[in-house]
Image 1 (spheres, rainbow, N blue to C red):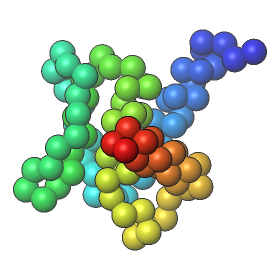
Image 2 (spheres, rainbow, N blue to C red):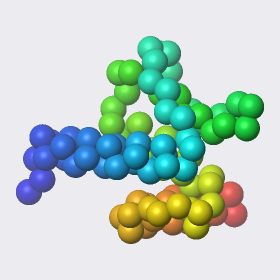
Image 3 (cartoon, rainbow, N blue to C red):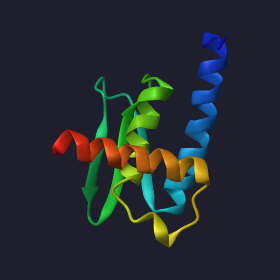
Length: 98
């Protein structure tokens, strides 16, 4: 049985890996006190992920995965686990838009 503590640790580990991947793909991560869910935007040709400093790791991960799915992953190395998560995200996006 997965405990809440174990699940949080897994989300934190995933967050660290996602931040590394985002940096290697040129995505800028901004953590600030915005009192909102956060989001993704393009500014002067850069892709930015902005989230509230108090947001959960699950929410942070969701935003970073969404940003990663907007970029062609073939140009950089991504761990297989992250590639699978991105492919899953793209599949969900197609289902929602279709």
